[in-house]
Length: 325
Image (cartoon, rainbow, N blue to C red; front, side):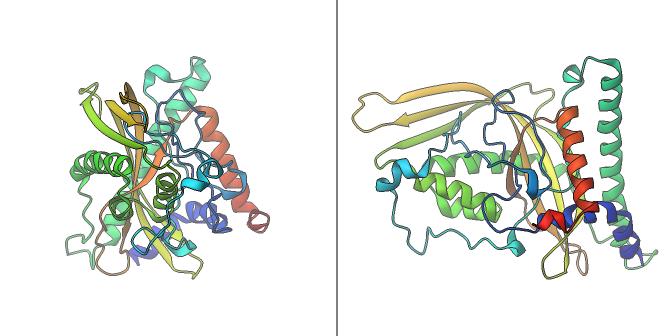
């Protein structure tokens, strides 16, 4: 009974997410804000496949490597063996961004207009309250009966250590070209993006990544969002996903080794990254949670980008047939 009530409460989010199952190509509306600097690309949260533009390549190292166009390095492309072959990407193993995801900016970066400032404040606080309520309802739904303890454990304190460890391992593996490590810690779709970037590197080029230090220790790293929701699958089975966004401010160093150059190119710069973690929860039996995996990164939300993504979700919820053209 509790599980059915929880499902009904999340029904608007479910309807909004259903149309996203319309393609298995890399042009899925899974926005990976590959450029970690908040000023390097426009802010946008995508929750619908029909309106997304192609994503940019993930970058490695301190200023992670920009993905180059594959045709340019076609002659250098490595032959894949069974250990480096990309995962078969089907809709059943694609993890979608939960609807109405918000990377709220600090108050200092709220819109200056009084009405827009208040609207942004309302959205940020309402989102925070709703996310907390969803976790609480899910926890209550995990009780076998009202006299027993919940089976679902939030473990919010484990999110930051997991995010920092995954952030380090992901960048080091991408720099070293370690596909197996990336396969283990990334979602299937994001792994394919990163594996493609590794394959596109020119032969003989090497990169080294180093986290110099964390910045703004009083405010970062911090949990920007922690939410849970049910997502439908093509088979009709609903899966429960927990999604956390952790903002990490750091100074990173990248060293590029290029054949023919005596000295490597060294770049060191401050970065602000909003790392998206995803985990699946067994909401029918044990209510256990799988280890966190890296979904990608997002840019900081603006009032306009959030309202635009919400409008797209609402339109697709009302026009599911048109969203699957």
